[in-house]
Image (cartoon, one colour):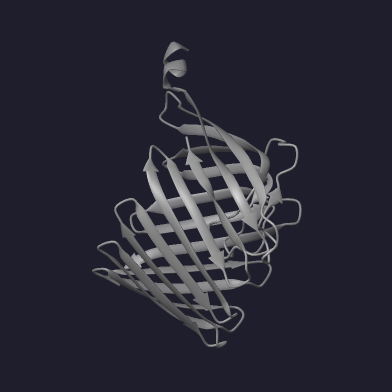
Length: 261
């Protein structure tokens, strides 16, 4: 029992956001929110790893991670009720996770599943997410073959995605297709503090991004076929603290701090 207690570990971490934001050129309003996350983990005598996590967010937060708009300038997080906990067990058989109605399908569109299983053998990874109440599921297979990263997922909602990515030095070329009969090609470059990407689809969609980092300062720009453009800047103060600001062509603006602890 003593060995079991020694192998267990509980961590408390979190993040915080605070600042001011404006939607559609209107008056600025203040936002502030704190997210606290508890994570526990341990190892059985037989070498199986286990753990669980849950979190809570309190306040009014602002999403400044890209594509911000007037619908997400300031969003209330409610009274700070605890999120749905996730519990896992892993070993040579793979990893199985449980989270009641809280797991996303691999298509990034559907969610609310209960159980997820992942297994990796060499360069091949398989995954399965299932909603036990509705019998819907999502499956994914990814592998690396000859330096090409392959990925395919499908689910019972008749949604599927497939992609192939090849990286040579600082450049990555990705080809993708999906059940919506849309094919896309993306070229991305990242080196020496500079990054850029261009993505084009057969549905006439496109997206261009660019970024530059010099010391503690970072600049990022985005434009797409929906006639949307944005620019964000940040300054890294060290120790998990950032000063951030941004604006877009919808006259949404924000400035504040983002903290990790």
